[in-house]
Amino acid sequence: MNTKIAILDENNIVQNIIDEAGLVIAQGGLVAFPTETVYGLGANALDEIAVEKIFKAKGRPQDNPLIVHVADFNIEPLVKEIPSIARQIMKRYWPGPITLIFNKSDLIPSATSAGLDTVGIRMPSNIIARKLIEAAGTPIAAPSANISGRPSPTDVESCIEDLSGKIEYIIGGDKSKVGLESTIVDCTCTPLCILRPGAITIEMLREIDNRVYIDKNIMCKPKKDFKPKAPGMKYRHYAPKAPVKIICGDLEKTVAKINEIVQNSMGKKKIGIMATDETKEKYPKGTVISLGSRENLDSIGRNLFEILRGFDVIDVDLILSEAFEEKGLGVAIMNRLKKSAGFDITFV
Ligand code: TXA
Ligand code: MG
Image 1: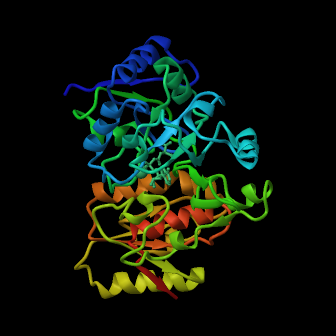
Image 2: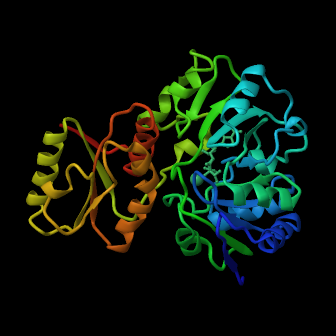
C-alpha cells in the first residue's frame, strides 16, 4: 500500500490535509496521527471492519481492546452511564492524557472493545488529533501507532518506521509532549482503580477522590494465569531488540553495579546504558544515553521510548537502566521500564 505522509506545523494547521485524512477514516481506512501522549493509529471506532484493519496492521492480539478518542464531551451515546465521579475527572483533566473506562453502549462494536462490555474513552489535548476526529465525524479508535510489542512512537519518524506501506495515511506533528501513554482509570467500580499509570498521576486523581488506588498487579511481574483488567498489560511491551535490565537502589551503588557488569563482560557484549544527566559521566564512554535530568521527570518520560528505540539503531546486546522513585510521574516511568525489561530488576 502507498502511504501518504504529511507533516503539519501544530501552530499553523493545513485544514485540507486534516479533511483528506478525516475522509480516509470516514471511509474505513487507517491514519496515524500525533497525540500529546504517543502517536496513535486511528480508524472509525464504530466501524467493525475498519477496526479489524488496526489489529492486522499492528499485529495486535485480538483480545486487546482499543481506546476510543473523542473531540467533545457528549459521550452519552457511547456509554451506558457516566458516574458523577467520572464527570468530575472529565471536567478537570479532559482534554488530556487520561482514559476512562465505562460500560459500553451497543454503538461500540465488539471488535473495538475486544469482546468486553466496557469501553475506554479519551479526549486528547493535541490539536491535530482533535481536528482529525472532528473532520472524520466519528470517534476514532486508536492504539499506539507501533508494531505490537515495540516501544510506542513519540515522533513521526517512528510511525513511518513501523507502519509505512501498511496504512493509508500518516500525519506528523510535534514530538509527543508527554511521551508515555494515557493513564487508564476504571470508572465502572468503586472506588476508582488505575489500570495503567500515566501523566495524570494517582496524586492528581486523589484530589478528586482520595480512595483512588492503583491495581496492585501492574507494578510487579504478572503470574502465569494472571488476567489483568486492561488486557494489554499482560503482554511484553515497549521492548527494544536487546534485553533490558534495571538496576534499582541507591544511586551511587547503582552506578557501581552497572560499571561492574560492564567490566565483567570484558568487551564481549556491547552494553547500552540508560543513564541520567547526574550520572552519565560516571560510565565508560560509548553507548551511554542520558534520559535527562532526575530533577525533571517530565523530560525523562518524554524521552524514554525514543531512547529505547535508539538502542535498536546502535544495535547493543544488552541495555542496563537506572531506576526512578515510584512517586508522581515516576510510577508511570517505572511501569514502562519494568515492562520493557520483562521485570528483570537487580536491587543494590
Ligand atoms: O495515550 C494513549 O492512550 C494512546 C494514544 C494513542 O491515545 N493509546 C494507547 O492505546 O496507548 P494502546 O492500545 O496502546 O493501549 C490501550 C490499553 C491497553 O492496555 C488495553 O488493554 C487497555 O488500554 N484498554 C482499552 N480498553 C479497555 C477496556 N475497556 N477495559 C480495560 N482496559 C482497556
Ligand atoms: Mg500500545
